[in-house]
Amino acid sequence: MPNLLSDLFLSLAPRRALFGLLALALAALSAGCATAPQSDPLETVNRKVFSFNDGLDRAVLKPTATAYRKVVPDAVQTGVANFFDNLQTPWSSANLVLQGRVREGAASAARFGVNSTIGVLGVLDVATGWGLPARSEDFGLTLDTWGIGSGPFVVLPVLGPSNVRDALSLPVDSLGTPQISDVAVRNSLTATRIVSKRAGMLEMTKLLDQAALDKYAMVRDAHLKRRNRAAAALSADSHAETQGLIAPEEPAH
Image: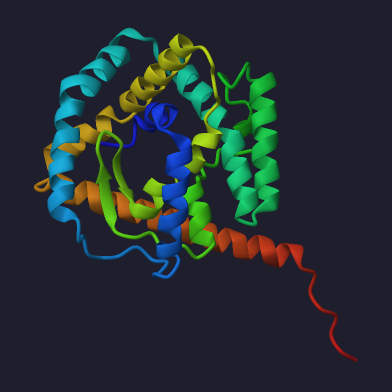
């Protein structure tokens, strides 16, 4: 099951304990290779957790998302998805800066400003048409640029596919989630975001159910490839930006 409930988890988890665990684990990961491992040493446990998550998805999330898709007009669904994507833009901007991609971070911040004002709190995506495309960055990818290895593939209960580094980055990524003191409002927004995300993946998961001989293996491989591509693109963009910021040396005469 995709990573749909991380916001709820992060709003309930004790952050001090999680930050302590993160510091200890990253110290160990930093000694390892920065590339994702090809083996799956936790496969036995992962498959059991994956089965639990898949059952939860079929019993709760998928039916709810299907009803949402049928009842809510397409334009409203798009606006809801845009609104929640916009809320994460400042965190993506901060991570871009931490990765050394300063110009892209500034562009992401500008995107947030445009969509939050002219786009009516992000409901309308005006910025893309203005040459400010959406970028999704997280602290796990930032750690990749700092040489922290991904560690083994892991399936988290409820949260879905991840790796050790990304899982332990969740407490830091929680800083990018707007903090709302009213519990009822916070829970309502979290539930709406989860359903909106799941509704956007109904076609993909339908194809997965029809085509996959081994659903776990297909989800694992797709997740690892997606994260590896994101890390590779990040590295290339960082190199290009660095080259653009450093003026070429004058030839010796």
